[in-house]
Structures are given as structure tokens and as C-alpha cells.
Length: 483
Ligand code: HEC
Image 1: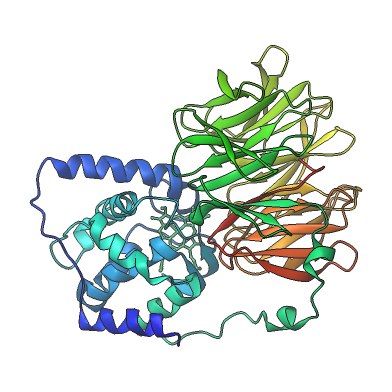
Image 2: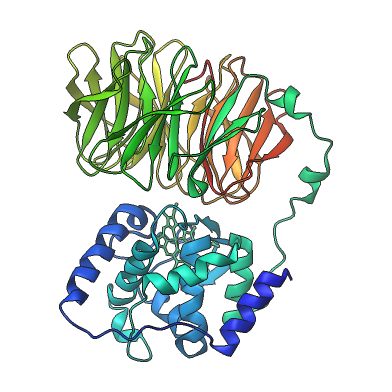
């Protein structure tokens, strides 16, 4: 057992925790509201609005989280929950008779200490949980979360902590040694064009193969390249700013406030506009890539998440995660033109377009892919893939469509002609961003819980390299020639 985990466990048993005593007052209401906001924006898509979860994919918060809190007299359980939020959780667990073998993303570095405290306070008092708590509930404080945040644990370490707190034995963990022992392709062979990884919880962009790390992008979340590769647009999960970096040296050329934390960003094929999606406002923010100023906000619908342009650049297709639809934005008028429903896919999240421009490939938030024929605006098929959200890429050359799954461990490869799943390639825990090289030879996946880029050879369909990003939570990847 690594010394940090041992330390974390002994400190649990010794009960050395900080519980600030806070008077119950009017602040309780605002605290509840703040936590409720974080929950609905960051947790509800997986654990569901009423905390009921999705059996087999996302464990419930209702009832269950109170039970966890009560473990070891509300000392170990309390600490454990702080750890889960900070570092995530990876491993096979059983909740109310159902097995979950997933991955909960780490929130440390993405949410502030205060937000983590708020959301825990919310979950433990909402959904009827408060009545189930064994003693009187003392709210978590930012200071308490901060103390947890200094330990540098992984989701697998937190899993060991869970088993210790609940007095359960550790199930044998997934065996990824076989993949790791395979001979690795050199970094230069595996990554020929520069690749830019948004390393969210470290607030940097990591350029590969050069390994340069570019700071100044707090919460680096989604990123996208300009068509000539000279500019990188990055959304900041922590700040509500969208950054434009010079890829020659990583300098931050502009930091544009769009009014809230942006999700997907994409630069138009003519290089003129950068679009950034504002989910709560329901807008797409338009940044002029010459002046680097915000020029317009286009209302598009509920909870927009990401977008892709038509090949001719005339339209942008924006996923509407909040209403099971796509918004079509006219790039000449910069207005929403119409909306296309995505039946069978309730929470369309990420999107790519086929090389001939006839089909959209959509990835939802919970574990499904859908393919839409644009001429008839009909869904041709939906597939079940790995659980949780992820990126999706139509691999150049047309052999595969690849998608990640943040709550699972594989990249799913789909044949775009037969519309069948070809293979699930085990890449490590929590793959989210997926982009192929411009020639389609390699498929890159950002493996959020393992802090690596997995490189899949599109000929052998095997992982040929695992490249550490020297930072936490690599979320998204931008690759030249494959926006
Ligand atoms: C992408 C989906 C996803 C999101 C978003 C997510 N979770 Fe989770 N969460 C999971 C999965 C999957 C697990 C179970 C992990 C496993 O099987 O090891 C989990 C586990 C947990 C657990 C521990 C349950 C246990 O039995 O130990 C807690 C507590 C929790 N999540 C709270 C939250 C909160 C609060 C948020 C929002 C800040 C959140 N989660 C956001 C997927 C998610």
C-alpha cells in the first residue's frame, strides 16, 4: 500500500479530522442553493436530478450517500466522501445489491474547495438523506476540503480507502499489466504532428511530442486549433474565460470572459470565428479570431455542449444536451437557423461529422452513440457504448468512428459503413477526449484517471504507447488537420 494511502487510512481511524462548528443560520439556505447549483450542473447528468442514479452505471446519491457518511461513526465516512469528490473513485463497488465497476471523475482542480464542500453539503441534506444521518450534521467547510486536497491520491487509492472504511476486502483490480508490458512505439513515431492536451485539473496545456507545458489556462477543459495550427482556443473550467494561445510559444494572447464556464470550443474552417459554448446561458459565444474580442452571443437552446462545422463552414451543429436535439447555426448570419431532434439520444454531448458531410456522429452524456443522416434529419442508429460522457471522432480515412467513456476504460471503435461495433480497446481508466492523427493512422485518447494519452494504432487496433501528461485529468486533445 503506498504510504499516502496508509497515512490517509490511519488518520481516518485516528479520527484526526477538522469539523468546524458553524452556527445553523440563514447561511444554511444559501449554502444549500449553492450546492444545488453545483449538483445540477456537474453531477445530475450521471447521478440524476433526484439522486436516484442509473442502476449499473451511476450509483444513487439518495439514501446511499447518507449510509456512506455514517460509516465508522460518521468519521471515516465523512472523510471518505471528501476524498471521492477530490480524487474520484475507480473500482468495483456494490450499492444496494447492484454492481458498479466504473470511474467517478476527480473534481479537485476543477471545482473550488468551497464548491466541493457545498455540493457534499447539498447531497447529504437533499433527497431525504439528512434524516438518515446518524448524528447532527456539521457542514463541510472549504478548509476541510483543502486539508484533504494535499494528499495527491488517485481514484484507485480512494477505492482502497472505501474498502477500508466499509470494512470490505479489496477486489482484484483490473489487470492492465499485459497492455503495459507490450513494447512501446517511440514518442516521435506515435505522435508525428504536434498534439495539444488540455490538462484540466493542473490548469495547463501539454504539447506533445515536445512535452512543453503551458500555464495560464486555469481548468483547461476543451481545446481546438485554428485551421493553420497557429492558434489554440481553450475553455477554462475554473474561470469562465476562454483563452487563445499562440502555439509557437504557448503565450496567452487573449482571455475572453463569456459570462460563465464554457464547454466546447471550435474555430471555424475559414479561421474567422472561434465559437465557445455557454451551457447555462444557452448561448454560443462568438469570438472574432482577428481582434480576439467577443462579438456576439447566439441563443441556441437548453444546455448546449459542443459543436462541429459543416465541411464548407456554412453551418455549425451545436449539441443541446438539455433537450435531446441539435441547433443549426448559420455562420453567415450568426443566427440559429433551426433545430433537429435526436430521438434515442436524450443528452447529445459531443459531435463529429463524416468526411462527406452527410452524417453527424453524436456521443451522449451517459453512454450512447447515435448517427444522423443530415439530408433527411433522421437518426439511423443508436448504440450502447462505455458509460459516462466522452469525445467522438470520425477517424480520417473513414475506417472507424472512435469514442471515449469517462466512467469506463475502453475506447469503442465503430465501423461507419456497417454501423457495427468493431472493438472496445482497453486504454486505462476514464478515457474522455478522442482524436485521430490527420492521416488516421493513430487514435489518441486522453485517459483522465490515469493521466496519460493512450495511442491506438488504427491498423493493429492495439495500444502502442501510453504517454504521461505530467499533470492531472487530461480532458481533451486538439490535433492538426482533424478539428
Ligand atoms: C460522468 C459521470 C459522473 C459524474 C459527472 C459524477 N459522478 Fe459520482 N460517480 C460516478 C460513478 C461511475 C461512480 C462509481 C465509481 C465506481 O464504480 O468505482 C460514482 C461514485 C460517486 C460517489 C461514491 C459512491 C460510493 O458508493 O462510494 C459519490 C459520493 C459521488 N459519485 C458523488 C458525485 C458528485 C457529488 C458529483 C458532482 C460533483 C458526481 N458524483 C459526478 C459517475 C459520475
